[in-house]
Length: 89
Image (tube, rainbow, N blue to C red; front, side, top):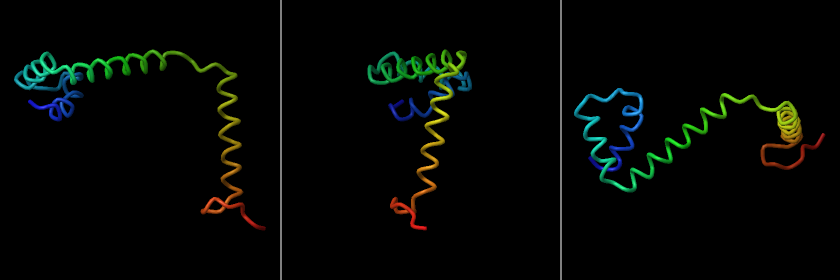
């Protein structure tokens, strides 16, 4: 198995969707390829962080500030032409 195939099958491995031979080949590659091992560790860390953050509510003040920022940005976009110049009335 090469690194590209490893990456392509990673989701299937994590989800338990690979047949036994594929899973064994995938694990063997992981055990012997430092680059893929590091990539998989990064993937797992990212997944863990996302799961943690999804379980935490966004503080109300941050939610309000983000909302205000989006509203301001949308307002600016509405007042500009497609080329980014201010619209003339």
